[in-house]
Length: 317
Ligand SMILES: [Zn+2]
Image (cartoon, rainbow, N blue to C red; front, side, top):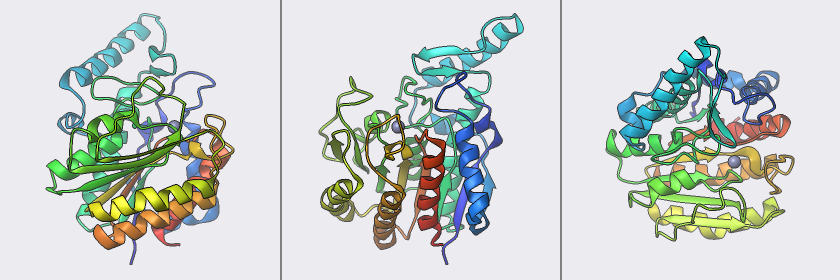
């Protein structure tokens, strides 16, 4: 019997980057509401995450970067007390408020707790409803709404702390997961498969041609059926040959055709199809073990419907 976990933490709602920012707390509410009205939430094992230990964050990020981020957060608290601004800007799209550091620890903590539970056989698979997202976060810097690379941290943790030998990362966000790629190219125990709109953000981050990456850059307005064909021909044979012992998903729903942050043409049924294909691989090689983490998805309606379609397949209901 399949048991699917749903991991989140109230602190993930407290991080916000200013009025009108698309990466907003309401994204999590939209998913929660959808699980409630459809009854799908009842089929999930709901768990509250704990903040990640800094030592686990440092499996991917440098000690200096983690300390610098904590320093910015602490500095901001004193500045606010003195009547200063409420945010520290990291790049034009990315800023910290007083809750960002704790939210980022809880987001990574959810991915780690899900990994523990799935590897213990306590859950078959899990979805982490978390923010800030992670796949642009690099070893030494935050960017593109991301602070800690949740999926890369959990994947490294599965290798280093649970002794797995091979893990795969699947990224279906509209944007290229440059931060994750940086981690994967340095570690042959990882395979990353992805598609993303190109040319597009993050433009100046080169796409590596390392052998453990299957990058599928696609032009704007590519439709779901074309993506499915690419996945069938390029991802699946490589995943099958790699035989991952666990699969991590960077679940970005901004590749939906209704999402204005990207221009790809996926719909809910495409996310369901992709999830089925990943589950097939996981069943054959990984005892079904999948941990999926929310990345993008900014149109609240299509985000909620797409996350539902994805979780429905994970939970087999
Ligand atoms: Zn994205």
